[in-house]
Length: 90
Length: 324
Image (cartoon, rainbow over the protein chains, first blue to last red):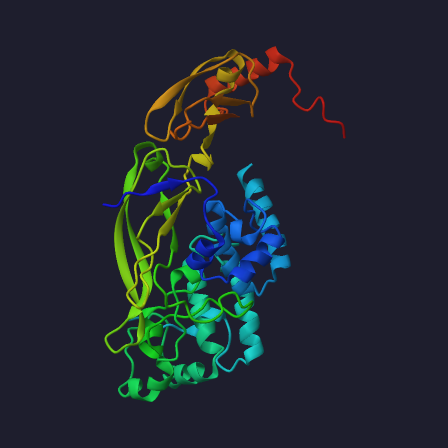
């Protein structure tokens, strides 16, 4: 049995995100510039991401690869998906 | 293993050209990609589509696949013809390495028997991945786990199956399966992430493992919708309960129930917030009950008469305020 630790704070670095998802740091920086991901703090070396950005980044990677999206287009896709999700819930 | 008819999967003829195959793939990708599709079973459909495209878009793989002949039916019991490994040996080792973290997909047994192990990437496109996975120590890994809503009330254990790249007997890169038992505590909310230290991927060079990040998702529930810590429920109520008021029993996801007192004159669509009856996190969420009036069917004379009486007594026009 393994003990899991609940994480609900901004605590993941860009290196950790890159390592988990195999997505290059340069691309992660582009995604932050397009507001697909929203870390705290000002420079990439000090960025801290929320765990939710980890799964968001994984989805971003899959969508970009399969649908050949640029970061700019991906930001639009995420906006639409978020809106669709909240419409479906209501 | 089962024969897979890749042409049938993509809905193209056996002599389709590359452009037709690409077009068919793109259309099906839009329909079944799990990140954008609401189709039941989208993930496994998309896996089939990806695999079919991966083979048919590659001239060498397509030629090898076509060699098997056009007489096989999808689902038929299949094994590779004798001498297959020797004929295809070169290409089998050229597979790109994949891991679930990178968005690559696990190949079917059928694919692996024809083209070797190692899986394949999900499709063409934007160069996110920069080639081979780093062969260093301490890689982190990410996975999602689906639990039932009831599990958030009592906690649960889950067995996870993870796949990671490893060296096979002959030095070839293969996908190794690893199972873990994880305890998920009660009070977990939708989208919450848990960290399991030291349970990530170990480096191919034998380095220490990184961490495993688990995202929790709830399976869709027939009755309840979950948003964060709050749970929503459309509660069916009778017209007299709403008009006259009274107590109604509201079922909770953990099997218990709570009494809700309806004030007289509540309308349909009226919402009640039951504080603290949502997910039992440290600060518990709320249960949001929306009333949905359902009327008895007029299937007996007595009920019909009751409706007539109500109609006469109430002088009620529901469409009075509709201006047309």
